[in-house]
Amino acid sequence: MSNEKTADSGFDLEQFLNLIAQRLFPRWYARHAVKEIELPDIEDINPRSYLCHRWLSLISVHEAAAESLITSHQQWHSLAELLKKLIVENEYPRSLSISAVHGVKVSQCDDDYPDLLSYAKEQANQIPQETDNEFNRNISLAFPESKQPFHICYREWDGRYYYLNEDEPRHFAALLSQCKKQQRDHNLACTIHVESVQGRMLDRVRSGFWMLLMKREFAYQLFQLVKQGKFECEIAEFEWRRSDLVFFIARKNDQALNDIILNLLSNHNSKQVLDWGRFLSRSHFPFQNK
Image (cartoon, rainbow, N blue to C red; front, side, top):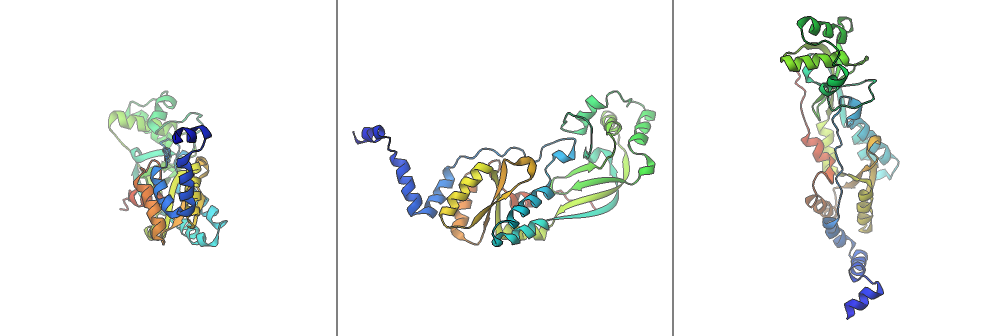
């Protein structure tokens, strides 16, 4: 009978008790609430494409996050400075196989393709690519000797090479297509620009801070939940192409807050909440500097 009265009155006893627990025991409530929170997948943050500007850019990510943190409380400025120093860049003169290249910088094509071979099937299928003479002709058109050394970028954190091309890459794509069909290859004299994550800086980020990548709406829910427990936390922007994502930022110097975050991570997978420091430390494809 009492249950019926409760239902008829529109009174939600469970919600009422949750509100009381949240107000009286905010840290205990947060530790348990993060287990139950339903998080959507953040989807692929580093999509495949024959155009490198559609890939994830760590430089853009860390610049956006650092700018957010610089405009917030001073306690987050040290993390902003670490993020600015996280990526280091070096150049090496090397010979590189064209089949190692995953993408290019520019194309006038309106369609996107997951890789250069897919682009070649539709955009370079009219270019002859059968004989040795045709192979050599495509080499001379795609990579004129006068433009040596050719500029290639390599990203150690995802193992992708891309060519800093100036012209439409149809002859390059035709070459790759012929290489695949005939099991052959061609080496280029290159200057390879290597983008690396600086391990010492990453260790400082990981030891001092939580950086959790999440859907924006749910990151703010976590922010409010943690703030009610009188913990310090912040929201930092992700790169502009994924405005649906943000970083939830917190320090690792409070065991109670660490317990809340570890409960969150242990009850959700990396497609729902991504520990950024761990992600960067596990994604490493060293450049073969020989």
